[in-house]
Image 1: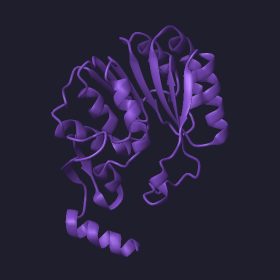
Image 2 (image 1 turned 120 degrees about the vertical axis):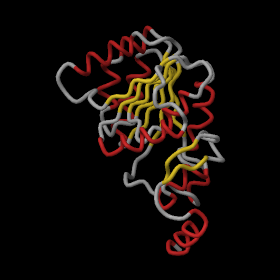
Image 3 (image 1 turned 120 degrees about the horizontal axis):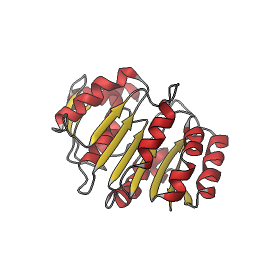
Image 4 (image 1 turned 45 degrees about the horizontal axis):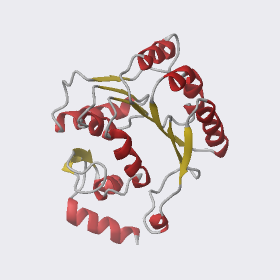
Length: 223
């Protein structure tokens, strides 16, 4: 079955990474650098599709986006395309992702967008975390924050406790263990947010994302 899928992907889309206009899903209309061999779900609009409706809702009025664990920048590009967006902060600690991140900006004519600040060095030591938290506190509201940083979510939420209590912050948190999920849920509740868990779609049994991590949960929180 895998060989058949690979054959049809190659026949229809070729091989290798290139800029492709996305026809479906949250990123519809954007041009993103994708490799069909491993990122077909982005093109199909099924990648983390469970979060799409909530992101569209929260993004309508958001004036700031914090994209922690930005990856290749899909959500960053999407945020910069939202009509009211004034500021986008993007962070990812993996240097191998940044060339594709910058390519996605260029494909959508956003390379020199003054609203964007993209960083690799937040949360990596020294006084960088406190500087980042201060920057977050100065963002215009409402703020949309997405966080998927492979285990650091609880630490960041603790540092952001005052920001979450004092500002209008809509949160999408991805967790990869039950313990982390429960800790983040508790911190968001303590900050005065209404918290919900997004259940995997029923069709995930047919179209999965082949994640290497067994536990995957999304939390959405509104003030």
